[in-house]
Length: 52
Image (cartoon, rainbow, N blue to C red; front, side, top):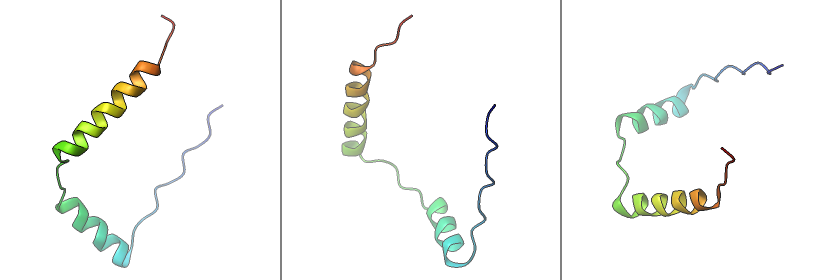
């Protein structure tokens, strides 16, 4: 039987302000970050073998 999922904690004070500011000012990933993520994905994909 599955375990119950715990409630998400509520942020207060400076943590809440920092979180809200970060959500309002999202920075898109740079080309370098995208390239690294794609290389990591391809590496993991090359190791994955699933029986079909």
